[in-house]
Image 1 (cartoon, one colour):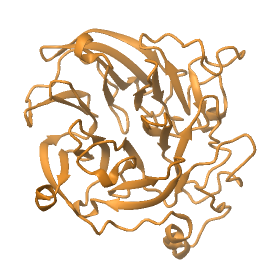
Image 2 (spheres, rainbow, N blue to C red):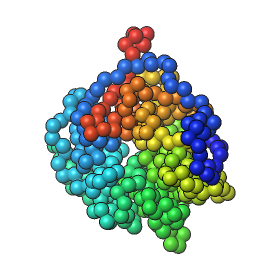
Image 3 (cartoon, one colour):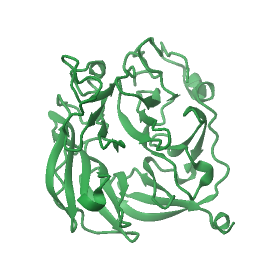
Image 4 (cartoon, rainbow, N blue to C red):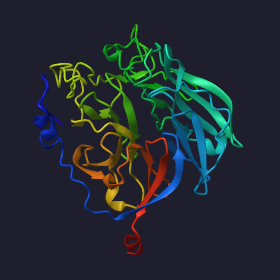
Length: 381
């Protein structure tokens, strides 16, 4: 979606009306045809949720713990054997992702911040879940170079149908210019094989000086990535600075512009760049200005809410809602709505459950796992 550049510090009144000027239509939802139940609570900043074939759920806590939910009950003991994460500010344990063949292999993939304050990076490991423990743990990826900041790690993962794994990364906040360089993992999405080796068809594998894992670049801090199973389109969203959050259609080898193009301004109000678009750089499908702070994301393909089929759901931290994005047949956003604002929660993740319910994670030192299903009256119909 096109917008205007912000070359100067904007008056507070103008900032207040920017959503009306720039955003897609985004009313609060007036059709609360759902009910919400708490599945688990007392989680320390839960970050990611995953479903196992036997009906159990896994949830990560940013503090470094992997927890199991069994028969709607949070087991008191965390999974043992999880590698120690570097925990500070935004750093910690991020995503948990079962392997596509988990029912046979028992393999889980975890992303986490690793290292120490003066030298840390996003890391991906895998191990087998056996009797409440992670065993045979091995590293499959670590971003380089390391950073000295405890922020902007990315950390979301997505398996593609060919078995390769996409891992989202951030720019480390202080390294934003490196998001335009191919000799650094800062501000990129990488693609690896399940064992950490590099697929032979990656876009920059034969380019001298480029890191062969890079799939796309020019990102700021990608914290949501999903795939439309019908079209194969891959969508990702990323945090902007003060404004300029983005939803993008991800294609291999493309440059998504940060920090050369953005609709946001720096936290001081200063201009980052005069450009909101530029030849050779991909403009976002949506920019959210002011920022909603997008976190997790889900592509809804469940059966319980047929009216939501084929739509994106974006967890919003600063926005304190879940953003529903309606897509047309060409995969373009045509409308938005804000859901679950009445809860007053920061939302870290949103997932579509195997039964079609929508699951939400609240970002709090006493975080909850919430389950959204159709209202009783609607279910009777």
